[in-house]
Length: 425
Image (cartoon, rainbow, N blue to C red; front, top):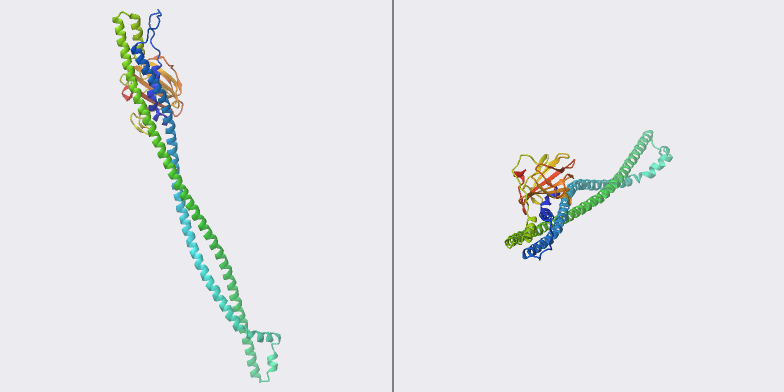
């Protein structure tokens, strides 16, 4: 499909080359004469033909350049689209990364607050432990002596029985107080160990989160920078490729105009040959006149031209691209049919096959001279049933289309101009 968009750039040189390759009419006379000296008309025609052939060779090269640049432009455009999609993906990933960073930052703040609270609790627990140690320190020697000889105080006390009972109560209260202080101290020490362990765990998690946050930020920044740089490079490459295609198409248009000018010169030279033949007839140089007339007729078509539509397309299928429809290469210069599998292609006019064979990337191609300077160009066939130089009738089978994804491009040319083929199909 894309190959047909560049096809209009190649057709002028194909048609002109095919027309120039047509064999000249042979004289009905069998008598051979020595060739006469080159006439002024013949020399003018030779110069015009030589100049045209040189430009055609240049146009062939220009057409190849256009196709190469169009392919490069398409690739650049595809790379730019892919890069844009990748940029969108990176942007989406960056948004996710930013959300993760926000969550990480919130967790970091929560951990920092928790660590601060744990540190305060550890300080408070340490202070309480120090206070309890200080309060318990004077009692420890007494508790130690009582633990060794708990009844010694009773034997040492000479008091009455009531005083002994009171002493026992004091000793019992002291023991309970000492035990209670010891339990509180142990509990606070256990709490301090728990706080320290929790604090160490929180600090480790905080360190890990901060490193992860730094890594995510660095990766996101690197992706964003790389994506922006690659997108800018791809966009510039696509722009350069489009400019190259535009310049190549302009160059081809200039060449086409020059070839048209030379074709007019050939027409003038042909007219000069015809005038020369008439002058020779008047001078009774009939053989020379016949040769001049044959040379002039060799450049002219003797067909009947094209006729109105008979309501049948040249192939079974649907119209995929209409005449003058906008395409990447500009308005379509023909009609493109999406064909059914293996469809037969029929001749849209009566005439002579000027060219039949493969042509570049367009598949099998035909140029059908309908006469009166009208030519149909059909490309995209898979097989051909006709040969160059063959005369065929209207609706004759020309060949067949591929069994899948068949696309037939049909163009009608009147001289160097493309015309809408729809009224004649």
